[in-house]
Image 1 (cartoon, rainbow over the protein chains, first blue to last red):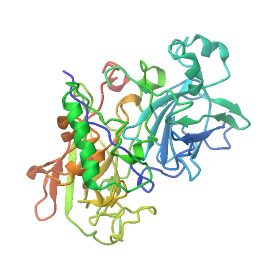
Image 2: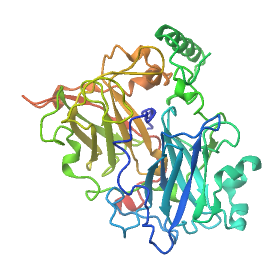
Image 3: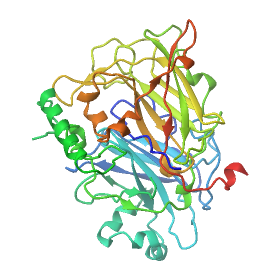
Image 4: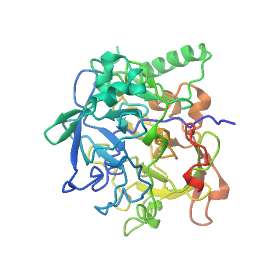
Length: 184
Length: 256
């Protein structure tokens, strides 16, 4: 029998001394041979950067394997745990150092799962960051095919010099596609 | 008109907005178990809520799993917020305990629970908190724990005080403890706030009232439980948490 869920609430403004932790944004060290930078800004409905947002990412490793290793909160520099947390800075910018996730289930394009928290956001938001490189995989992905074409791009990172760029737009023009899940 | 930057509204104006939305909700007959993201009485939500409906997605791949935490991540003393400094913090010492389960009532075992809160005077240990209440040098107000084999977490802490904020003129938040929770799947991730029974600020608070269903928001209120008090040491509260659904069956590797 299903039980009614406990409601969420905003993360508020004062998580800064509690949730961020040392190396939270480093899923791999910058010296890792496959390290990429995954970064971007969080924007509000007037295009202003959001300086008090918190992003978490959860992803497979470069071979597409899901990590079942503890140690995210006290990283040893060697164990890939697949999970990271980064707060935006005063300019609304966040940055992770990670690897591009390898291919997932067959017929599915690879993505990084994301949770977004912010002051002013009454509950967390989920989205996905798809990798931009494999146009065939993106084109064949059944989930992306179900997203209206004009909004699909909000789910796909762009390449830049150091890796991947992905902005989160909470509201308005270019609003990111956020996800809900059946039964949730 | 609501303005995200100004504290120009009075409590009476905000309370009237809250009441109007509550009356409108009561007439719909729809159950809303989660807060509304678009809830104008909470001014900061005005420019930060998505305007488009979320896209329904079947969880796939990585989303069917949750990050893994263990004793490497969380020290045994991190669940006692009264032990983090050389001296005793000021305030009412409390135990807060409860069970984390999924939508089918299954225990969420060995999973991370993080909390953070104001001190007994309503002041956060955060540089942006300008409330002129005293900082307690013996209280940081952040803790972590892992749930046990039954999904039970336990913290020892100090009862937080209510505090003023700038949503509107003379706005006060009911006392609360922030909770950060993980489930067995990524899609169960959530952050919420636990409140204390009988708080006179409930009716005035747009964050609490953003959950329009009265029964749903009462799920955020802990219960005083004499069974979890410790003699000559602390009072105690119980607060159980139900995460949103669960898709993966227990046949998977968890029980292997």
